[in-house]
Length: 356
Image (cartoon, rainbow, N blue to C red; front, top):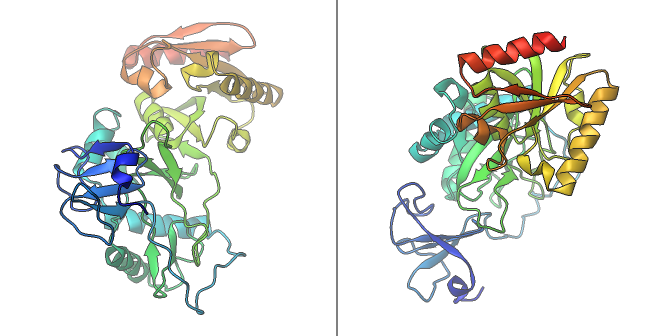
């Protein structure tokens, strides 16, 4: 890799909210806008940069030849859900949630403390530390084979189980209807304009590793009004909407990946589609929203399309801004729900009763 790579990338300076992922300091260092590498001015690596710092990859370790005892298992199967849930909860317990990530979830995102169960900060880059974490989980569960088939875990070049490193960010749980953690999405801290904000926590392509697929997230707070179910995109957005509205919210892993959500619905339940506001201007989002509405309608559900002030992209942004959420009956019809709060929830309940 070129030594002048620092000049060819876009970079973000570290800060108190986003410290250096290598040395954990809040000044002098920087992270590439795509979250793939860091320039640490304190910790040396094998690759120096012209500004006096050292290059550290954040998305994966360097490639090593696998010893003969390690072969990528092309027939690896996803571990059962109860096994994944146990492993992931052990991982959450070992990793914890950095103060800056906890603050982000509580304040800009508006999640209450009980909603943070299952969230964690991404694993550290240090390989020894990640081996130790995997060993702790094995010891906690008392089974050396417990990590087989769990996305995010794989066998390293030394033959030991490790959890995979990613760009620094938040592990966002993807729960099933019973609250079991099926998988994690990674919300990357510094993703850059061209890079993805979310990636799956996966170990696909690694010895003993596997992909999580694209499971659907089901968020049901402790106190939930099941008279109306919302479908939106993304697990974190669904979590915020669910806890703020007291509603059952399904988060599909992409606007076109909605078919598995249909299997989670009771017969004839009322469903509101809450895709981002750009559904009015983005042909792809508009087309998938229409196809989902048709599928729900022909399956016997009462269907509505949620809209709000277009200056706010997602339903979570609109709710946290205190905006009214408009429920447009599909096909045809219109109802408005005022800003969140007890009056808003009461109005929504009255609206749902009127539709029944």
